[in-house]
Structure formats: C-alpha cells, structure tokens
Amino acid sequence: MSRVHAEDRGLAAVARVREVRETDSRIGLQQVLAEQAGLTGRLTSLTETLGSAVLAPVCAPGALLAQRTALANVGVLAAETLSALATTEVVADEARVRWGADRARLAAVELLLERRATGRRTERARREAREADDLAAQAWAREAAR
Image (cartoon, rainbow, N blue to C red; front, side, top):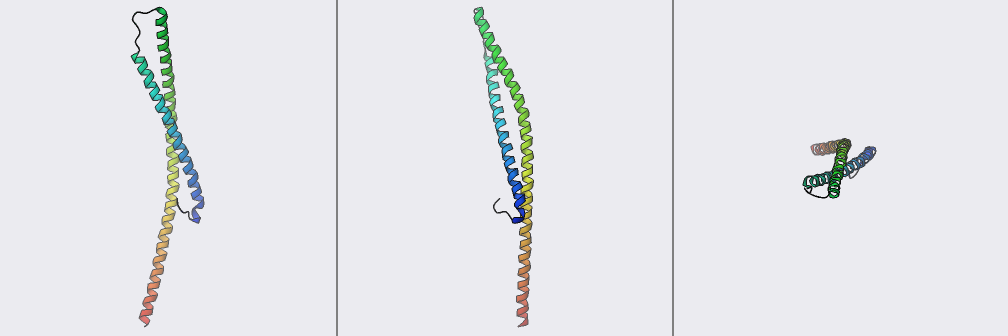
C-alpha cells in the first residue's frame, strides 16, 4: 500500500494487522513443514538401517544380544519418529488451514481497499469530465455569442 486515503486509514490498519497475522501463520507453516521434512528424513534413515541390518549367523551370545538390542533400539526410535511424524502431519494440516484463512482475510481487506480506491478514481474521472464539458460548453457559448 503506497498512499492511504484519509477515509481508509482504519481499514489500512486492519490490513496491516491481517498482513502480520498472515505472515506469522505462513512462517509457522514453513517451520512445521521443515520439521516434518526432517522427521521424514530421519524415519527413512532409520528404516534403511533396519532394512540393511545383518545379524551374523554365528557369533557369541553376548554379541548376538548386543546386535539385537541395538536393532531393537533403532526400531523404538523409528516408532517414536513415526509417531512424531503423525503429530506433525496434524499440526501441518492445522497450520495450512490457519494460513489459508489468514490469507483469505487479508485478501478481502485488500480487495475492499482496492475497490474503494477504484471508486474514488472513477468519481474523480467523472468530475473531471463534467468540468471539461462545462468548460467546453462555456467556450462554445462565448464563441456563439461573438
């Protein structure tokens, strides 16, 4: 918004507030999407670790227990990551809805401001055309009187 007409100062203030809210909700959405991407990468890594794990066919019982415990821990981490990923999906959906609503509210105020500005420009053009017609009529009347 460059110059704000005096009649639109209040509405321009509303637009600024809604713009801040829209920016905040967009940043929140970006943060949760980044967190979601990080969790997805972590889950992929843990799943690949589990998939590529090879237990030695013959080993000491202590080594077998250590390998199985390590794999069980990786499985627990994968389950926790999956749970956190499900949570971030819910949060991301809510953030997306909030951002969409904030964006729509901002667009509504901006549209109203633009319509008001267009109305003022149209009215000014009509007034100028009327004045030009009056001047032309006066000039014509002067010419006709000569």
